[in-house]
Length: 575
Image 1 (spheres, one colour):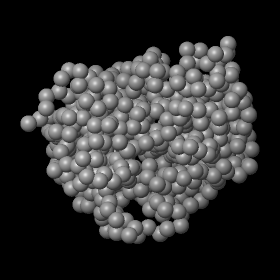
Image 2 (cartoon, rainbow, N blue to C red):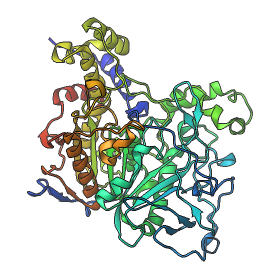
Image 3 (cartoon, one colour):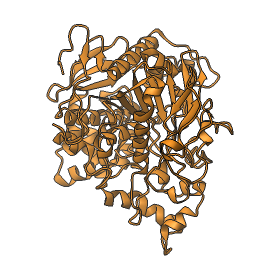
């Protein structure tokens, strides 16, 4: 017999779950026709109308003449039209951007433009300030090398890698012409404290070619440099503001790269999914994109006081600046390397019930309400939405658990007096092993059931919503080891960069790998184009039946993903 939750226990468990966002960060035609095509191009709106696997490597710093170095220094000015004027003529590899000419490099699939500055370097007084436009240039800049990652810890204990001058993006296009192609803008994960749009797994040439579209990856400020709050700061959520600045750059420049600024889709994974869903709730992001894809991330954000108590206040206490007359001047005098190493660092963790780290928080200007609440009220940036999670999100980061007693002890140590109802809901006897049971507990609580909650909330809007459940695990494992649909696994199928999984290792794709890759690239691309195409047809989401697309080989559809388990968690989180 299942134990009944008391009100105190329910409240306590809700508090635990509210700290279980992805990566430790916060957080329509119904039948689609026989071909599975659904037009998503018209169901768009604006705010107020009725969003890593082991292949994440540090990016290179780029050459001394690259576009990544073009905004060195602290000056911030668009310079006006005359200041940006140039005699340079565009060509197959030369593009005239809103701030000056750049030259990219031809690839097998098209043209790449790398390390492009979309904002001024956030240095000096621009540290913890809203992003400013970069200074114009008139000579052609070399955009053939990836720029640096933003300053971050490479491991939980260091070293520090990257640079503070990192607000750059990368563009892959089949051709820099007037093709008017869909544009896909990717927001990377990493707990808002780690990661980069420069990682090899995110290289966009293959996805661009597969969908005849423009693919863009971005950097944004991370950790304390991107997400510090303080009463003396005129703004907060700097990482979010960076992402909005990048989308504004896309609006101004997409056409020059063969893209259509009216068909921009934002997609993100893990913390990048949290940020994508935050963009759905951010007033300043209204009108900058027409679709969003949220992969393994929540749509909740913390209140300002809760966030300060968990992150900013402890950081200031450990910084040595809390007692200074001018706290911000003291902090700005510290090196970025020192800042990101001060606890709490927010270094991401997927396994277990990781606490929340740096990330978006509520703010009257940039994020007045939680996105999940704006969705429920229909006041979010109402655009077509794909949202989902992977079947065994925490599989890769969960250690072996010796036996049932060890499993019980782990749940009790994690959830304390709240463990009893969870153990009743997830008995070891329902799973192949104690480890599998714990993977189910943590994956459901942190990811799978949050996807249902957000899909149900978003379905209150006018635009179509689609839920997926990624369960593909028929891939090559060295030594014939076990496999699971773990956190971030879907990225290699979307981008198609199997050669980036293990550097120097030629990954042997299975037939199932190729089915899943081709399907995800086609579906994601058709969604970005404005007409979702899927075989089988992907039903538009509605809350009661909880329809979803099952992504494995072969693809399938169904109703109700782990319904009993998600009903259990919904007692505390809703949805």
